[in-house]
Image (cartoon, rainbow, N blue to C red):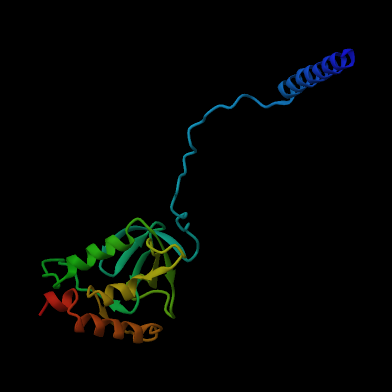
Length: 191
């Protein structure tokens, strides 16, 4: 009977010893108490806008449906297309000229565009002759909108090939035929 009491006492001492050192060990090694923090804020931002480079430039303002002025003060005439003329010097403007200018503004005004040269550097008015591209804001893969083509295909411009700058003339002719057949833009409003 005495042996059982000793065994129980020793067992009790061992349990107390383990409990004491376990609590001490855990409190010394434990991390700060658990603090509930608000969930992290996730910010989804659009991809960075293209920055100006020799082929990329920011549009300062839109002159008309097929002409822009860039931040470096170059006047750029879109190659391969022609939009109706705005009224100037007591001349009546062409049908759909205001609409073409507004669409051009919507596409490129104050945005960074990519300019592509064909053969000629400038026209007789010293305007740069270029094809114009913008990033498609709806595409996540860096796709671009070909502004010259878009204006023709949507009926805001005519295809107008002038040699030697004819790289996309066949594409523009097809775009014009599509716009005419579908009565888009000026093909629906102008007679």
